[in-house]
Image 1: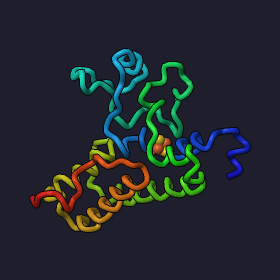
Image 2 (image 1 turned 60 degrees about the vertical axis):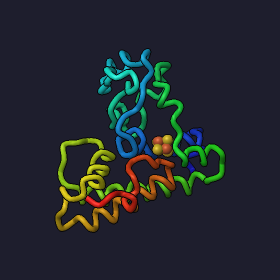
Image 3 (image 1 turned 90 degrees about the vertical axis):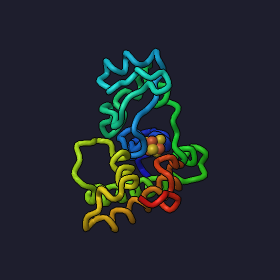
Image 4 (image 1 turned 30 degrees about the vertical axis):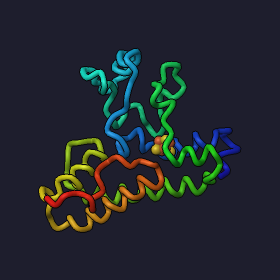
Length: 180
Ligand code: SF4
């Protein structure tokens, strides 16, 4: 990758800039904030919720993701954003997965997300993960001509989320769910 030398960016930065899936509502529904971060996050325009002390944070997609994080260099960059590292990012930092392979994995994930997105029923919900989970948890409600293909692609995507990103908590595995 010529970009590595030209920009002096670390492989980790290059990877996350090409991805953004943890910020854009594809992997998670919300991100946790510390109490001291809530007001500033709100002033930045994030959708903050704070009533339940065990669930204080902001909804995803994050409006500050614009091809890259626009507050990445802020001294007030939220703790969770600084600390979160998906499985793939950890592997790139540990140099157990070469950056080009990691970038290919991100491309594949985005392609699979796109393929599934066009099959999902129209929705006002901007959070892809919620839409995906709704498909899998409330299968009967969405029983139309796209259902078989949609469920196949959703199951494949869940497997990829686990394998690539280490995200496993979206839903009980479909084959362990009780029939509805
Ligand atoms: S999902 Fe992983 S690789 Fe993608 S932006 Fe988040 S931490 Fe970076």
